[in-house]
Image (cartoon, rainbow, N blue to C red; front, side, top):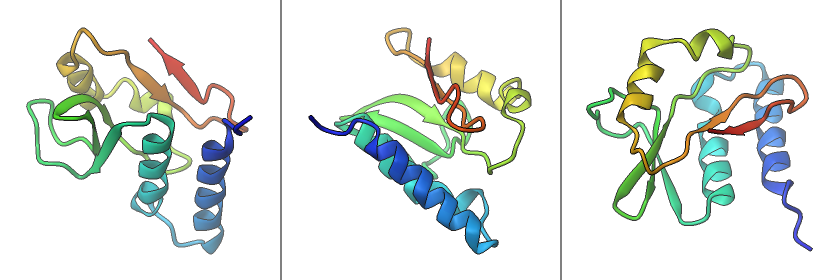
Length: 119
């Protein structure tokens, strides 16, 4: 049986290693996040720093084939995600998403509590 949490553990290991060096920023963790998203959601592409869209300038656009299915706004470790969730930028991303897609939120809170939520 495959280890379904292996990609999450690898992501956490990579972020922890970056943090341990003491010089990381939000951008330092982006490669690990791209790998995590593309591993968890087979067949998707996570494009880092894509061209601007009508929603603005997301950190990632998630695509399945030629169709954009979502956005990711990456924030540095330690940022208050509950405050960021109220931001105008995220409201624009939500308004532009297709009615056929589901919203995926990832918040790394403590020891992976509330790691994923679909709405």
